[in-house]
Image (cartoon, rainbow, N blue to C red; front, side, top):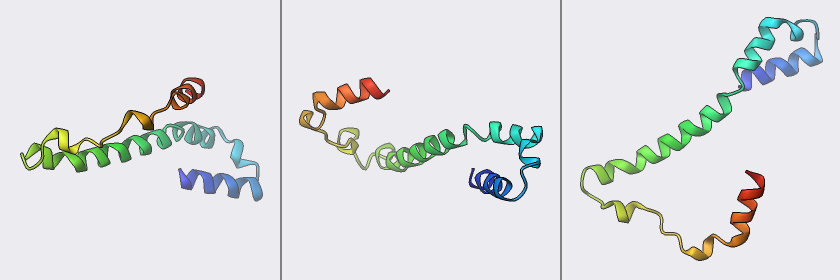
Length: 85
């Protein structure tokens, strides 16, 4: 993603001819889901890092869950999530 962005910026500032080449536009289109995949991969790595303790019987699942009180999630949080998502 960073490489495609850097090449795009270079292409815009130097020579604008090849930036509209269908092959380059196809590369840009195919790189669009990479940000989402990076976020999902980070989440998976985080969650998998927690699980070995539970799988091997060292820790119980109820101890591994992050405690959240109801007060953390206010009605405003639900409203904002509903509006923005």
